[in-house]
Structures are given as structure tokens and as C-alpha cells.
Length: 263
Image 1 (cartoon, rainbow, N blue to C red):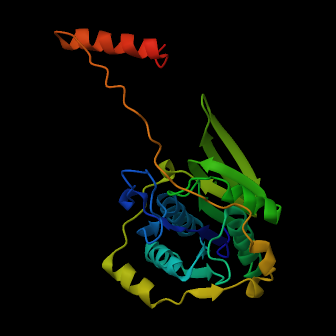
Image 2: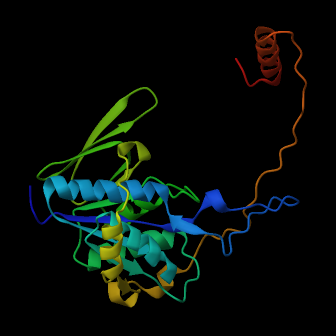
Image 3: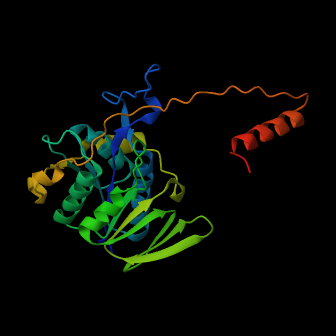
């Protein structure tokens, strides 16, 4: 295997949905000032990138698109084993939609040396749109393998497995290739004190549209989030009657069938 394999991995510094709160009266979730963290799926992508390098050689470059605070996600990627980190940011764009993220990732990878393998999580923990990988591949005109649960790197490309409803599909693609991975692909390692210390001393390269030959106008959002809210669902509070667990179970199944939610 080539020791010069160029592996890139995208990470998002997204909203920590486990620590967000909704207004009890309106159900609106306050995202401004909400705690943030590295998207869980992206930690699997970083782990897979590092494992590929350990097996096949090469270098791992972590890349993120977002505000300066996204450096925190890149620091974690470095602590998990990435060799280098790049932040694409633009003060003129307060929020990047998926189109802008894909364009920025594509331009950054293309301009800063190119790549053989670009790994992403199958979706972000906060929005889970699941479209950035496909958009990046489209921007670059390369193959896109999505929802991968097992990845094997070969001399000229990769072989990937992914679950379908009734079967496992095996796909192959030549380099360069974009791959999105699910959480079942691996268990991310936990950074050690020393790896965190080393990561804190590494330089994170910051670039903007001009550095990667990307027209700033191409980052203008075409999608805007107007409101994030928890749906209000009225509970029916239907009582169940029965003198034993079996009777209660039969009553529950009967009620579910009446509601059309049980065959």
C-alpha cells in the first residue's frame, strides 16, 4: 500500500442535542449559545481514517467548515490521531447551509493537495441531513459510497459494505472517493492525556474562500432554518384494565390494533 495515501476526514462542531432544552410553553429549542461538541458520527469517521492510516500508511487531515469555535472539534480530531487540521471559515457567513459546507469542503480538499479518500459521518448529530457527503462528491465529480459499515482499502481504491433492508451490499470504487460511515463501523478511541497535550500544541491552518479559489458569493445560503421546536403531542391517557400481566398485555395489543399501529 502506498505510504502517500492522502486521507481527509470532515468533522462538524455541532449542537450538543443532549444538553439542549425546549421552552415548556412553546416547545421552541434555544440554539443560540447552546453547548456544542464534535458530531458523534464524525468521531467514527476520524477513527476510521486513523485506522486506515495505521493499516495502509499515509496521512490524515481533519477539516471543518464553520466559525472559529469549530477549532474545538479539530483539536479533538488531532487528539484522536489526525496528523493535520484545516479550518475553513468566513466571517461574512454567519451560518453555512449544507450547500455551502459541501462547496467549502470540496474546494479546500481540491486546493490543498487533493485527496485519495475523504471520510465523513453519515449525518450530523444535530441536523442529520445526510446530504453533505453526496454534495461533496458531486462538486468534485468523484464516487460516493454512503452508509458504510465496513471499509477495506486496496491499492487502487476501496471496497465497502453497507446494510440494506434485507441484504448486505458490497461496493467498490477507485480513488479518489468520498465515503460516509455509520456508527457500527467502529468504536472510537478515547483520547489520552498525552494525545490531548500534543494536539493542543499543533497548528490548525485557517483558510477562507480566497485561499481555496472559491467565490465568496457561492457560499450565500439558500436554506434557512426558521424555527426548531419539539412537536406538541397530546397524550390520550387511555387506562388499561386487567388482573395479570397477560391480561394487561392483551388489552394493550387490542388498543394498539384499534389505533392502527399494530398489525
